Every structure is written in structure tokens, then in C-alpha cells.
Length: 127
Image (cartoon, rainbow, N blue to C red; front, side):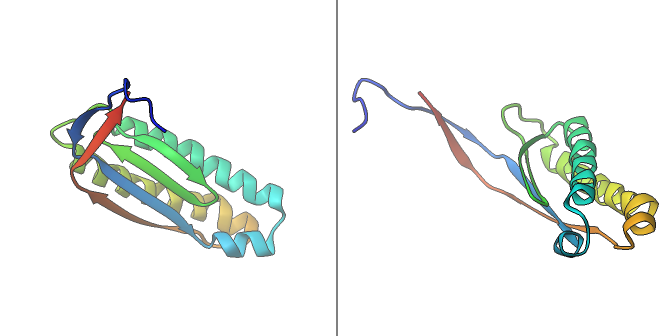
């Protein structure tokens, strides 16, 4: 049971969540050494981190081939939706480049990215 003396304080925000995942990840895992797949994913994650942060977002989770990012929280900008869209476009270009330069020639497998984003008013609570 919650302590009645602790009151939650809320703040309304309109964050944007960007969700991206690799197409071809299952094929990579089925056809290649796990260490090779891990190298690909480490490179995608490292580059994604740079891209998301450069556009004012933050990666909240990387799970397998999925990358979830957040824009507009904790710091909001008037153009968070534009920042998110630009980051998504740059993520896609990065994966195309990585696939063409490294994954396809070395592993003979193509990877690409799917992304979507959603936004809406939320109330953020903290104690």
C-alpha cells in the first residue's frame, strides 16, 4: 500500500517516441556467427546514439534490433517533431550506408530500418 504522506506531483508534456527496428535481423542471427551479429548491432547502437543525441533526443531502450528514443522530455523544444523526423531520416541513411559498406560485402546480407513515431499528451509523475 502506498504511503499516504507521499504525494505524486505531475507535469503535462507532449513527448514524441521514435521506434526503429532492423529488417533482416532474424536472417542475420540464423545465418551468421553471434559475434558478427553483435558487432553489427553494437555499431548500429553506437551510431544511433550519436544521431539521436545530436537531434536533442535520448535513447530510452535498445533491445535486440529495436531502438526506442524519446524527444521532448525531459527538455522540450518547439520543434521536437522536426528533430524526431530528422533523426529518423538520418538513422535510415546510416543503416543504408552501414549495410552497403560493411554488412552486405562481408556477411552477404542486407539490412534496412523500419521506423514509426507517436506523440500525445502525457502526465509525468514523480515523488
